[in-house]
Image (cartoon, rainbow, N blue to C red; front, side, top):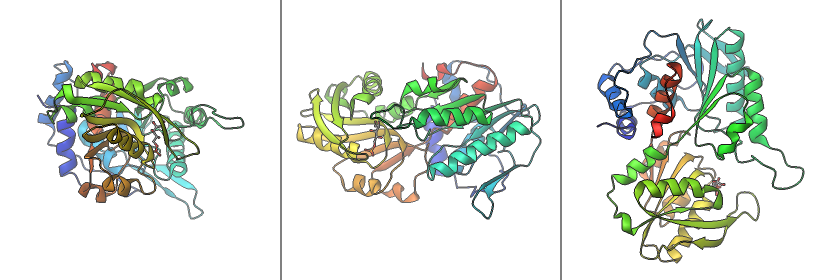
Length: 364
Ligand code: R5P
């Protein structure tokens, strides 16, 4: 049986970057008939394809490789649009095909230059709305500004809510995203949100390593990630450890305590985001200091700010497994970082949304 992970690994090995922004229309791969059968593991034997349907898939500039891979999965071309800048730096969008009455999906993780990519998304939604699209779904593989989802001190903003408001007001009818930093952010929207999980893709990768589960522990690097780590541990039949950390100041991490026995064990530290990498490195140092023999890591969103990649490559970590919700520089292909694609996951969620099929079946 072919799985989401196998489909996307093949694609990552074979694909070439095909878009650098501005006006584009992309060819589609015609070699996916066999791959689509891979999705039969989801238990629906006759799956309608999107070819010839009233659906148009657009992409902003933040993750062209992933956008193209989603289009390839769906066997449709990306919609024609200009997404660039005016000379004064303002974002310029021109939709280059008729979308009147169409069900439109816009792929744009709000990463990289977050303010720029967020504005691109908002302006694309506005343009599509004013072009009389029937529905607009914002496909946001990585939802930026999510980490300010509550006030931790007086006079702070709640940016996760502000961004939800902006996306809704721009004209989105629905959001598809992956591993929101906090599941409660779904409630910041008054439109439906499909918060997909990368967990089955990451877990499957580790299952294939054939670790002895009686000697395996999954660790959460902070209290907020316990649920994610618990689900990971359950699927691998592994033990669970929890690290309690505090942030003395933004982007600094300090370990306060650890629950769980990791002595003599292989540990996988599981998180949603790697940004500066400090939470991860602190967690790994703590695990090794408590007797762990080997440390791996898994995370959905690889922001890899500042020196994170160099720190990871110089660390005692065996391997860090992330997804492509955020594009990584090609230099990461040589170090300790392995990238798995979420293109099939997102493509399948789009297809299921369009045909009003269950999305939660993807995680059953
Ligand atoms: C925090 O709550 C998140 O789950 C991550 O642990 C955090 O964003 C990682 O940040 P950094 O890599 O900068 O320590």
